[in-house]
Length: 115
Image (cartoon, rainbow, N blue to C red):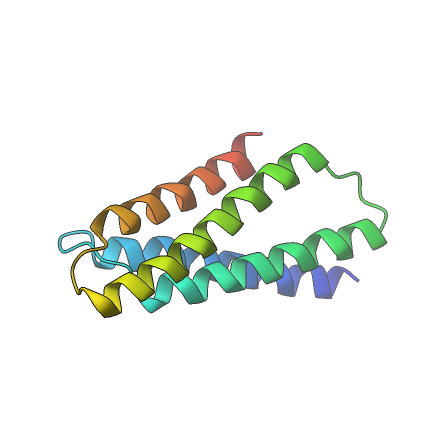
């Protein structure tokens, strides 16, 4: 079980890097890019898998923290989907959404580390 948890934890970190890294890559010319969407999907799926695996392993989890992180992750995913659709229709118009996605990604890290 520990191997599976560690694999999904690594995937979770890669998803986080996809969100924040994509945002940092376009911060001078902000727009929503596909890396944000792919990172959000990976983070959401791997986070849910981590919760399930840890529950099955008998770990004592903070469900309030997990719930808040889930809401933030879903918000990131929705913003990425909406932003990509808007970006296709009107290139360069999604700067505020890109900054929001990056900020929410950092918020999720802060919640994970400090709570």
